[in-house]
Image 1 (cartoon, rainbow, N blue to C red):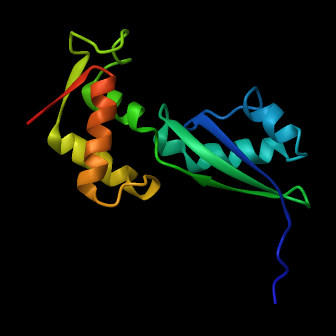
Image 2 (cartoon, helix red, strand yellow):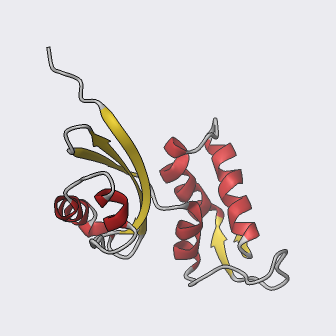
Amino acid sequence: MAKVKEIVAEIKLVIPGGGATPAPPVGPALGAKGVNIGAFVKQFNDATAALKGETIPVVITVFKDKTFTFVLKQPPVSAQVRKAAGIEKGATSPNPVADAGKITKAQVRAIAEKKIAEMTAGSIEAAMKTVAGTARSMGVKVVD
């Protein structure tokens, strides 16, 4: 029977796809746990080469023998909304009057389908409402 490795830490970071470097936040977070930073950077960049430029949440599990595994998550909903609307950032004021951009219900559905596994929403419709709410708070209008 395989021996179960003892988990020392679970580190959550948000890193640009294909752009991990030993500089902060990666280096200090992993170095403090004794992980080989260069090995993580190489593996992460190889795994996210196709997602260059997108922000990728990653959960790194560090074991007692200083080895690690990592799980890549979907980019945040706000990042996906910005990309779909073709904007750099959302509205600069709360309860925005002017539209920062527009996305269609089909785009909202596509984002919800990507993120539903990581959301607490029980259905695709509930996930779509969450995505639409995020878009609205960013000043992005959802159109038919």
